[in-house]
Length: 184
Image (cartoon, rainbow, N blue to C red; front, top):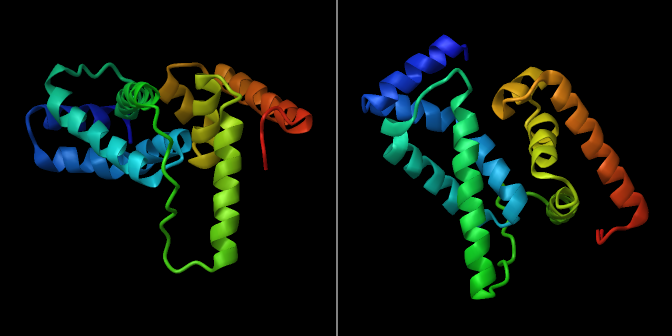
């Protein structure tokens, strides 16, 4: 989507156009969900937080000023803030995360086990990275975005994205080879 198209979409949403909000939701739901899921490792919590991101989008759209960065960058900021709030509440309540419930369409038991192990491994591994490194890895490797797209989302240069990706992969490699609290 070009900047002009996105600017027009934001204008329509600010005017209360429900189809504009629906388009934003359709375009960005999966990315926001993935961002949250790989941090909480819980389907229900990720779904709840994702829903809250879009509720806040609707509630705060009037205050949003489009400055040429993708609206997805703003959605990630909302998601990050909600995630911080969620983690604080979890720590205060002293609750443990619920068992993950991977929802798929009739996978075989070995497929369910492999997906669960891969997801758990990735979730634990990401904790060894900085926030920016996590975001680069998720956008580049999980979502398959280009360096240019990731740079735009993060407000960084393509060179900075490449550097973050390189450092993140090196950190993951070190963590895996030294077994730093990663139980596979």
